[in-house]
Length: 226
Ligand code: ADP
Ligand code: ADP
Image (cartoon, rainbow, N blue to C red; front, side, top):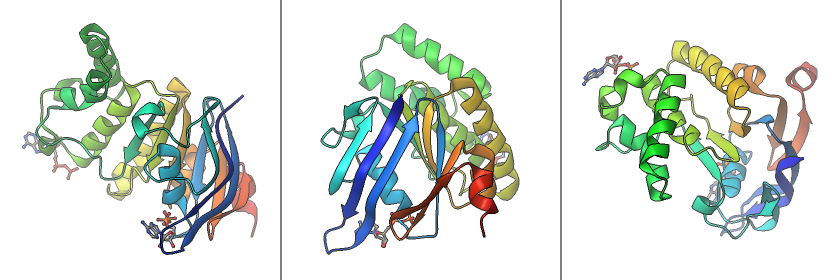
Protein backbone atom coordinates (compact mmCIF):
# COMPACT_ATOMS: atom_id res chain seq x y z
CA UNK A 1 0.00 0.00 0.00
CA UNK A 2 1.16 3.53 -0.71
CA UNK A 3 1.86 5.31 2.56
CA UNK A 4 2.52 8.67 1.03
CA UNK A 5 0.98 9.72 -2.26
CA UNK A 6 1.44 12.85 -4.30
CA UNK A 7 -1.17 13.20 -7.02
CA UNK A 8 -0.72 15.86 -9.71
CA UNK A 9 0.80 18.13 -7.08
CA UNK A 10 1.71 21.67 -8.07
CA UNK A 11 2.77 24.90 -6.42
CA UNK A 12 2.64 28.43 -7.75
CA UNK A 13 3.99 31.01 -5.32
CA UNK A 14 2.34 34.39 -4.94
CA UNK A 15 4.00 36.45 -7.65
CA UNK A 16 3.58 33.64 -10.17
CA UNK A 17 6.67 31.43 -9.75
CA UNK A 18 5.76 27.85 -10.76
CA UNK A 19 7.97 25.96 -8.30
CA UNK A 20 6.39 22.48 -8.69
CA UNK A 21 4.34 21.13 -11.61
CA UNK A 22 2.28 17.93 -11.92
CA UNK A 23 4.27 15.71 -9.55
CA UNK A 24 3.01 12.13 -9.13
CA UNK A 25 4.79 9.87 -6.63
CA UNK A 26 3.56 6.77 -4.75
CA UNK A 27 5.77 5.98 -1.79
CA UNK A 28 5.23 2.46 -0.48
CA UNK A 29 4.99 1.58 3.19
CA UNK A 30 8.55 1.53 4.55
CA UNK A 31 10.12 2.86 1.37
CA UNK A 32 12.98 5.37 1.51
CA UNK A 33 12.68 7.90 -1.31
CA UNK A 34 15.43 10.42 -1.98
CA UNK A 35 14.60 13.58 -3.86
CA UNK A 36 17.48 15.04 -5.87
CA UNK A 37 17.96 17.74 -8.50
CA UNK A 38 19.68 21.07 -9.09
CA UNK A 39 19.27 24.04 -6.80
CA UNK A 40 15.91 25.74 -7.35
CA UNK A 41 14.24 22.68 -8.91
CA UNK A 42 11.55 22.59 -6.22
CA UNK A 43 12.80 19.91 -3.78
CA UNK A 44 12.28 22.00 -0.69
CA UNK A 45 8.90 23.29 -1.85
CA UNK A 46 7.69 19.74 -2.45
CA UNK A 47 8.86 18.53 0.96
CA UNK A 48 7.30 21.53 2.67
CA UNK A 49 3.97 20.85 0.98
CA UNK A 50 4.00 17.29 2.33
CA UNK A 51 4.88 18.65 5.77
CA UNK A 52 2.11 21.23 5.64
CA UNK A 53 4.51 24.16 5.89
CA UNK A 54 3.49 25.38 2.44
CA UNK A 55 0.02 25.34 0.88
CA UNK A 56 -0.64 23.03 -2.06
CA UNK A 57 -1.82 24.98 -5.12
CA UNK A 58 -2.91 21.98 -7.20
CA UNK A 59 -3.40 18.26 -6.66
CA UNK A 60 -3.57 16.11 -3.53
CA UNK A 61 -1.23 14.87 -0.81
CA UNK A 62 -2.23 11.66 1.01
CA UNK A 63 -0.49 10.32 4.11
CA UNK A 64 -1.53 6.90 5.39
CA UNK A 65 -4.52 6.97 3.05
CA UNK A 66 -5.80 10.30 4.34
CA UNK A 67 -5.93 13.50 2.28
CA UNK A 68 -3.92 16.04 4.25
CA UNK A 69 -4.02 19.16 2.05
CA UNK A 70 -5.99 21.10 4.63
CA UNK A 71 -4.42 19.70 7.81
CA UNK A 72 -1.94 21.56 10.00
CA UNK A 73 1.59 20.12 10.24
CA UNK A 74 0.90 18.79 13.76
CA UNK A 75 -2.10 16.78 12.49
CA UNK A 76 -0.23 15.01 9.69
CA UNK A 77 1.51 12.24 11.61
CA UNK A 78 4.90 13.06 10.08
CA UNK A 79 8.17 14.16 11.67
CA UNK A 80 10.62 16.47 9.96
CA UNK A 81 14.40 16.70 10.36
CA UNK A 82 15.98 19.97 9.21
CA UNK A 83 19.55 20.86 8.31
CA UNK A 84 19.78 23.47 11.06
CA UNK A 85 18.51 20.94 13.66
CA UNK A 86 15.95 23.45 15.03
CA UNK A 87 16.60 22.41 18.63
CA UNK A 88 15.40 24.50 21.58
CA UNK A 89 18.60 26.03 23.02
CA UNK A 90 17.30 26.46 26.58
CA UNK A 91 16.12 22.84 26.88
CA UNK A 92 18.16 19.75 27.67
CA UNK A 93 18.59 16.98 25.12
CA UNK A 94 16.00 14.95 27.04
CA UNK A 95 13.43 17.78 26.97
CA UNK A 96 14.13 18.52 23.32
CA UNK A 97 13.33 14.91 22.48
CA UNK A 98 10.28 14.78 24.75
CA UNK A 99 8.75 18.09 23.68
CA UNK A 100 6.49 16.85 20.88
CA UNK A 101 5.20 13.95 22.96
CA UNK A 102 4.44 16.21 25.93
CA UNK A 103 2.48 18.55 23.66
CA UNK A 104 0.51 15.58 22.44
CA UNK A 105 -0.34 14.66 26.01
CA UNK A 106 1.50 11.33 26.15
CA UNK A 107 1.97 9.87 29.62
CA UNK A 108 5.22 10.39 31.49
CA UNK A 109 5.95 6.66 31.36
CA UNK A 110 5.56 6.50 27.57
CA UNK A 111 7.69 9.60 27.10
CA UNK A 112 10.47 8.26 29.32
CA UNK A 113 10.47 4.90 27.59
CA UNK A 114 10.57 6.34 24.07
CA UNK A 115 13.27 8.89 24.89
CA UNK A 116 15.40 6.18 26.51
CA UNK A 117 14.95 3.90 23.52
CA UNK A 118 15.85 6.64 21.00
CA UNK A 119 18.84 7.70 23.11
CA UNK A 120 20.06 4.09 23.09
CA UNK A 121 19.68 3.81 19.34
CA UNK A 122 21.48 7.08 18.74
CA UNK A 123 24.08 6.64 21.50
CA UNK A 124 22.96 9.82 23.23
CA UNK A 125 22.43 8.28 26.67
CA UNK A 126 25.24 10.18 28.34
CA UNK A 127 24.17 13.54 26.88
CA UNK A 128 20.53 13.64 27.98
CA UNK A 129 21.07 16.39 30.55
CA UNK A 130 23.17 18.64 28.29
CA UNK A 131 22.00 21.71 26.42
CA UNK A 132 22.42 21.66 22.62
CA UNK A 133 25.25 24.22 22.72
CA UNK A 134 27.39 21.72 24.64
CA UNK A 135 27.11 19.15 21.85
CA UNK A 136 29.03 18.67 18.63
CA UNK A 137 27.30 19.17 15.29
CA UNK A 138 26.86 15.44 14.80
CA UNK A 139 25.39 15.02 18.25
CA UNK A 140 22.92 17.83 17.62
CA UNK A 141 21.78 16.20 14.42
CA UNK A 142 21.30 12.93 16.31
CA UNK A 143 19.12 14.75 18.86
CA UNK A 144 17.06 16.16 15.98
CA UNK A 145 16.62 12.61 14.70
CA UNK A 146 15.78 11.39 18.19
CA UNK A 147 13.04 13.96 18.42
CA UNK A 148 11.57 12.65 15.18
CA UNK A 149 11.90 8.97 16.15
CA UNK A 150 10.13 9.25 19.53
CA UNK A 151 6.98 10.45 17.81
CA UNK A 152 6.69 7.17 15.89
CA UNK A 153 5.24 8.97 12.88
CA UNK A 154 3.84 7.48 9.67
CA UNK A 155 6.65 9.17 7.73
CA UNK A 156 9.94 11.00 8.18
CA UNK A 157 10.71 14.04 6.07
CA UNK A 158 14.37 15.04 5.85
CA UNK A 159 15.46 18.40 4.44
CA UNK A 160 19.21 18.12 3.71
CA UNK A 161 19.85 16.97 7.29
CA UNK A 162 23.59 16.46 6.86
CA UNK A 163 24.58 19.45 4.78
CA UNK A 164 25.83 21.51 7.74
CA UNK A 165 28.22 18.78 8.88
CA UNK A 166 31.83 18.36 7.82
CA UNK A 167 32.64 15.72 5.21
CA UNK A 168 33.84 13.03 7.62
CA UNK A 169 30.83 13.35 9.87
CA UNK A 170 28.52 13.29 6.86
CA UNK A 171 29.84 9.86 5.93
CA UNK A 172 29.32 8.40 9.40
CA UNK A 173 25.88 10.00 9.85
CA UNK A 174 24.89 8.66 6.45
CA UNK A 175 25.65 5.15 7.68
CA UNK A 176 23.75 5.83 10.90
CA UNK A 177 20.67 6.94 9.04
CA UNK A 178 20.91 3.80 6.91
CA UNK A 179 21.04 1.61 10.01
CA UNK A 180 18.07 3.43 11.55
CA UNK A 181 16.17 3.01 8.32
CA UNK A 182 16.80 -0.74 8.35
CA UNK A 183 15.80 -0.98 11.97
CA UNK A 184 12.72 1.25 11.98
CA UNK A 185 11.45 0.77 8.42
CA UNK A 186 9.63 4.08 8.49
CA UNK A 187 8.48 5.53 5.17
CA UNK A 188 10.83 8.42 4.36
CA UNK A 189 11.18 11.30 1.94
CA UNK A 190 14.70 12.67 2.00
CA UNK A 191 16.00 15.74 0.15
CA UNK A 192 19.69 16.08 -0.63
CA UNK A 193 22.04 17.45 -3.27
CA UNK A 194 24.73 14.91 -2.30
CA UNK A 195 24.93 12.03 -4.78
CA UNK A 196 26.64 9.61 -2.37
CA UNK A 197 23.98 10.23 0.24
CA UNK A 198 21.33 9.57 -2.37
CA UNK A 199 23.04 6.36 -3.55
CA UNK A 200 23.50 5.04 -0.01
CA UNK A 201 20.04 5.74 1.30
CA UNK A 202 17.54 5.53 -1.53
CA UNK A 203 15.30 2.59 -2.32
CA UNK A 204 14.19 4.82 -5.19
CA UNK A 205 15.40 8.18 -6.40
CA UNK A 206 13.19 10.93 -7.70
CA UNK A 207 15.00 13.43 -9.92
CA UNK A 208 13.30 16.81 -10.11
CA UNK A 209 14.09 19.36 -12.79
CA UNK A 210 12.36 22.68 -13.21
CA UNK A 211 9.66 21.58 -10.77
CA UNK A 212 8.83 18.41 -12.72
CA UNK A 213 9.75 14.77 -12.15
CA UNK A 214 12.42 13.92 -14.69
CA UNK A 215 13.15 10.35 -13.56
CA UNK A 216 12.08 7.86 -10.88
CA UNK A 217 14.02 4.65 -10.28
CA UNK A 218 16.53 2.64 -8.31
CA UNK A 219 19.77 4.61 -7.72
CA UNK A 220 21.86 2.56 -10.14
CA UNK A 221 19.24 2.87 -12.86
CA UNK A 222 19.10 6.62 -12.50
CA UNK A 223 22.80 7.33 -12.19
CA UNK A 224 23.82 4.94 -14.97
CA UNK A 225 21.97 7.05 -17.52
CA UNK A 226 24.09 9.74 -19.21
P1 ADP B 1 15.23 23.63 -4.16
O1 ADP B 1 14.84 23.19 -2.79
O2 ADP B 1 15.27 22.50 -5.14
O3 ADP B 1 16.49 24.43 -4.19
P2 ADP B 1 12.97 25.44 -3.92
O4 ADP B 1 11.79 24.58 -3.66
O5 ADP B 1 13.59 26.14 -2.77
O6 ADP B 1 14.07 24.60 -4.73
O7 ADP B 1 12.57 26.55 -5.00
C1 ADP B 1 11.87 26.24 -6.20
C2 ADP B 1 11.52 27.55 -6.92
O8 ADP B 1 10.57 28.29 -6.15
C3 ADP B 1 12.70 28.49 -7.13
O9 ADP B 1 12.52 29.15 -8.35
C4 ADP B 1 12.57 29.45 -5.96
O10 ADP B 1 13.16 30.70 -6.27
C5 ADP B 1 11.07 29.56 -5.80
N1 ADP B 1 10.67 29.85 -4.41
C6 ADP B 1 10.99 29.15 -3.31
N2 ADP B 1 10.41 29.67 -2.21
C7 ADP B 1 9.69 30.74 -2.63
C8 ADP B 1 8.85 31.71 -1.99
N3 ADP B 1 8.61 31.66 -0.66
N4 ADP B 1 8.27 32.65 -2.75
C9 ADP B 1 8.48 32.70 -4.08
N5 ADP B 1 9.25 31.83 -4.75
C10 ADP B 1 9.85 30.86 -4.04
P1 ADP C 1 32.13 19.89 16.38
O1 ADP C 1 33.26 20.75 15.88
O2 ADP C 1 32.08 18.52 15.75
O3 ADP C 1 30.80 20.58 16.40
P2 ADP C 1 32.84 20.53 19.11
O4 ADP C 1 34.25 20.99 18.95
O5 ADP C 1 31.75 21.52 19.29
O6 ADP C 1 32.49 19.53 17.91
O7 ADP C 1 32.78 19.51 20.33
C1 ADP C 1 33.67 18.43 20.47
C2 ADP C 1 33.29 17.60 21.70
O8 ADP C 1 33.28 18.41 22.89
C3 ADP C 1 31.91 17.00 21.60
O9 ADP C 1 31.98 15.66 22.04
C4 ADP C 1 31.03 17.83 22.51
O10 ADP C 1 30.06 17.02 23.14
C5 ADP C 1 32.01 18.35 23.54
N1 ADP C 1 31.63 19.71 23.98
C6 ADP C 1 31.57 20.80 23.21
N2 ADP C 1 31.19 21.89 23.93
C7 ADP C 1 31.02 21.45 25.21
C8 ADP C 1 30.63 22.08 26.44
N3 ADP C 1 30.34 23.38 26.53
N4 ADP C 1 30.55 21.31 27.55
C9 ADP C 1 30.82 20.01 27.48
N5 ADP C 1 31.21 19.35 26.35
C10 ADP C 1 31.31 20.06 25.23
